[in-house]
Length: 289
Image 1: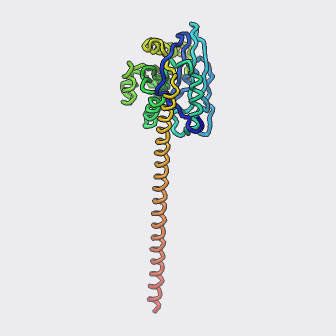
Image 2 (image 1 turned 120 degrees about the vertical axis):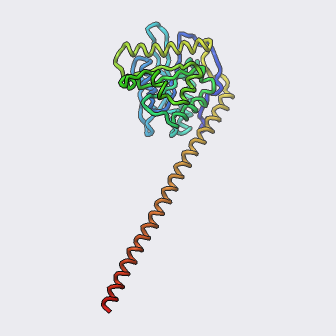
Image 3 (image 1 turned 90 degrees about the horizontal axis):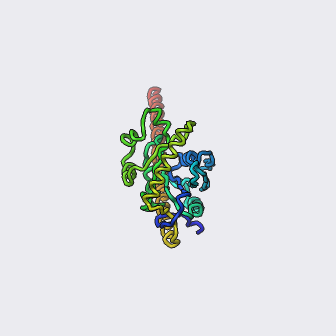
């Protein structure tokens, strides 16, 4: 697809997938703990944030584990798809890799937020991008994971406390669409019992999603619809990048104006000082005369 290679999965359709294998996709803003959450689910450190110049995981990848009950879980970690500094060409290449990894379907879309960070406009934009990326049916497959469980525990707070008092309205609205499917993760804990229980809570929600969707995962089958969806997301990215450039240009112009005004003021001050000095010299001459 060359340079125009950003994908939206707005029009993915369904296909059968054995419940013995579950495929989960991690989606969220850079820094919210997607890779650490993937490692917690898998029970091993396999996802690494290979820092590039922009500080994101540079490649989409899938890792697999077999649970104690024999079920196989695939976890796909995405690159910085919600990092608005990433160019469309890089995102496009990674998303086509993602499509290949998820070719047998997606059982649940895990949207990762952090209780450590304030819900900003960037987070809101990330949510909008998730809907653009996966389409309106994301709500049928979405589970929200909040990372930073250790911080809530230190503050003697539960997830319900957070959702009741500190959870922002846009996120509450999303959660309410599908019965508050969310779970709190502590990716730093060394407590094996706690590690096991939080993963089991998540997998229980995954089973709920599978049941509510009649065992049918999300999967792309229509190439023409996929191409249309890709174009829509590329247009959105172009708008976002243009807006960011305009903001940067406006800030630069404002700085130049400010610098120009400062230079003018300095010149006026220098002229005033010069006039004062000249005036003083004239007074001295008058006194001599």
